[in-house]
Image (cartoon, rainbow, N blue to C red; front, side, top):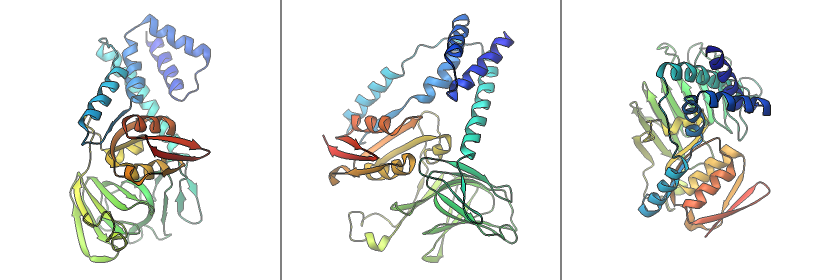
Length: 345
């Protein structure tokens, strides 16, 4: 049985990395037939991992209920009891290998530019270990840079895009993240910053520790966040003052968002390669998809922009995402080359 366990682990890893041959696929099926308890493990690693959930507009309860029923039919799989020890040993081995594979793939997508500047392309992600040991996970279409004297008296980096930070504590050398609209000062903490120049908001979400936020246009104003809080700063406030968002506050302190199923933090699910949003407008989701999939998306009817959606996707391509959104929303879409056009139904 231990030999079967080892072989099963090897085959599942190859399946995850899409390197399974036809003969190996048959071998995997044979192993599963010999011991049906392994099917629960495969369900845990595969079916649950690839499920998606989408529902439309919190004000349209009937749409929500219909979507939930569709999802229940999709993921309704009968499960059997699996011996706990066997399950934990095999699952731990496979998941550890999956994490390693994902980490290596994550790390391979950084493009080093001149000096200490790193850039990810649209549709790719990466990570970076700084000279002080702090770790940064870098989302797609993001640039990070730091000066040659990083770590001598302070630790400062410059960010355009989105990144997740796990900072080594050093009271004598504060860590500062500079963006176009806000600066974030930390001692040792875990947080996420989203600061794309083409988006209407800059956000910082605190997972643990503490951070101080100052505005680039008003350095006298210091905002301190507690764990599980996030700050949302509207960009170009003066330009937007007469627009449709004029009644929204320029600065909003709110709680981070969590999935109901497992309390995962929505703002940081991207580091697990999960595309997630909660009660976001179609306009904001489109910006997210542009960075994620490197596509151009045009909303032909402005009345669709403020419709709210929630969803979680893992391993889905842009067509899968658009199909799910259009299924639950009031729009259809067409694609021409690398451009997607969204129109009312």
